Length: 372
Image (tube, rainbow, N blue to C red; front, side):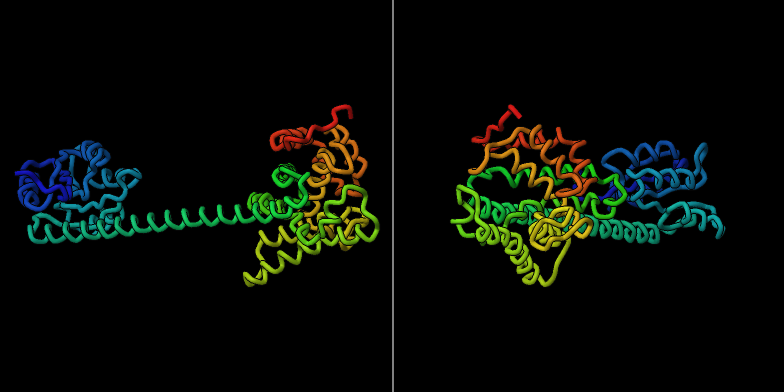
């Protein structure tokens, strides 16, 4: 007769033929059965797919007893979840205690009562099925959560990029500026991690958030009139004051998002700090608030280096694209005045990485002056 495919499998572990015959006859109508006549064979069968759903384990066997066999089953991740029921003539309380301590789910003393054995087997197989169902459900729900989180992160990243691109499209000479600067910021942050004064801020998680926040540094440009933003020549003092307001516009735009969401979070905080303070200078001569030294948020200090470097190597209506060497030389002059000395020194130590990023995301029309 062909067995139903949904029959569960019970492994009988016993070295006595009469016991094996008795248990096999008892179980065959409801379950598939497998047999092992010693502990070593039991370990082999239990670890081989398809694995048994439950094991009936004798205790007194030569070479390896049932306690040791069960201990090894529970140590192996492949077989640890298979429930073990001891069937044994050892009837002392300490024997049962030891069996349960080894990881068995039940302990039945011989001579057995067939109805009791069948009831215990059914109970523990039902428990195992329920546990497996819950594990499968948890795995499924975890997968759904991970997939949904991935989709939300993708939507967040796309929205950030779209917002940043909206500002950049109003200044058609910047091209891949936002992609370059976010990679500069991440590279610089990673290189600064070992420095004690940056360890608390520049965690792996925060560096990822900084990378995502960086494209919003010039979001405030959407509030600057075209006549100023796109002016082909030098801005007059009044126009310059209006241009500087892009940092405030950017901050206010992100504050509105925070208000809508009911409060700030790490990502929005970094984005707001970068948008508002990336034009501040280490010596206090920057804008919009003239912050000085460590009063300038770390995120903004990182962006200051990234933004200035990229501006120098990029073509503008008022200047050609400078070579990497010339840009580095000009930035070195700003150590301790425009830039945090430690951040500038770190930039100098990884300048080749900046050049690689610049080449990777180079604007098609940009050809830096290689004469220095």
